[in-house]
Image (cartoon, rainbow, N blue to C red; front, side, top):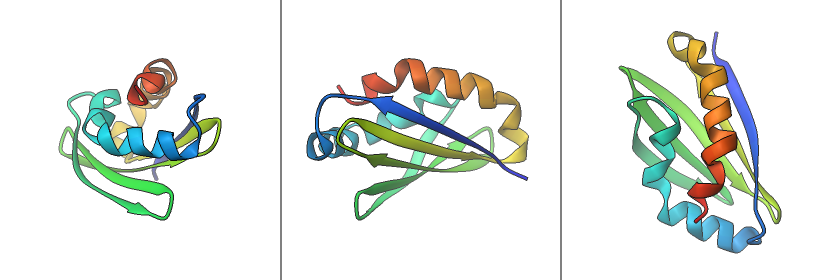
Length: 100
């Protein structure tokens, strides 16, 4: 059973600029996962779907920009569920840096 993490990252950029910054910074996204690296990403409309590889696990994730926030959803596999609170806290703290 997976452990989904959901975090809203506030911003004042507007949807289009938030999307553009996410596209430019997609490589930074794995920083919230210990030892993580983005191995695949694609846009489906306004939703960025990406896969992070960490500790031999594949983590399906998505980011959806809105006018005032980006909604992040990370679906942790059972092995990494122990890190859910740590990852959630790191996203909340460092998430705005992804939009710089």
